[in-house]
Image (cartoon, rainbow, N blue to C red):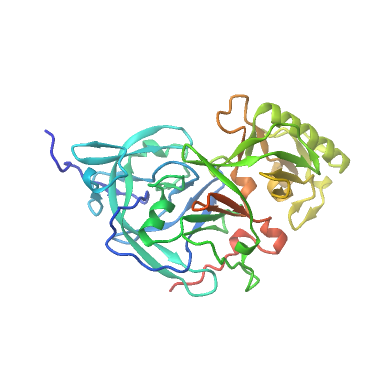
Length: 404
């Protein structure tokens, strides 16, 4: 029999999804960036973060995704601390049943979707710019959806759910900024090391200070390009790709940014042209080819490549964005991946097939590691640094100042 208040309750198992109510109980001034660590999982090559949910205070570890309209958490039937969201209390509902709000949740790996009941809870994030002791900000009445393990297929083990970073009013950064009256922006600095986390910043354009240099503010060294949104995901204009200054022939296109795709993929005809030029340039540099290791097409003996602070010395790849002086340079640390127990190096770009939908090129997580990537959703622009390794630091070197 239908009831105005649903006859169900939920139990949260370290998993989180977050969205924000339109009328928070209070706002907390936060001049410093809120942040959370980002961990890479070697078994899946995906990235999770850690935030705290209350009550009681407990860490949860959702997958981060540059897409999806809302966040979701893995729940079971005994969690009573979070309250169901009623339809008349929020404009974020995708649909309503018996006055209960439902959100549309999607697994970005399997592409499975499901209507999931929306709940409200309190969570917290630490805040610091890397110079002063961290403190915690508590944000009540955030909305997330409560999902069964059905939507977590393909996620890293022990993942709590999904944290939506997509272009949506119900995404994590949008709701956080609305709740605390912060700028609608977030930055990712992915680390390739599972033992040394990277970091995500929310609600601030900087400064972001990284060790070992006390005054190294990475936010001051960003190049900007227009940011586009299609289906809650983020795209940038791309007019050219160059390998050692040799251009790859293709028409201008839009490239998607993805944290759930490990390596950059290209539509087949672009990939084949790119691969041909890269292999010719690698031959000029006397890199010795070895048998390819799936899913890669071009692999080389590690002994034939000298090293540098930005990884193995291989042909440099430049993504030329909306104009010729807006260039995302990809050094060996981001263009190659180690294989065969370190004996080989493979070009970390893959064939995306001929039917690619909206994205002829998808920039994967490996290419974004140790690069500060800032998504400014107020001015709709993407800021990106050069490789932090070239500056003597890395994404794992942010000063996570002790908050105890």
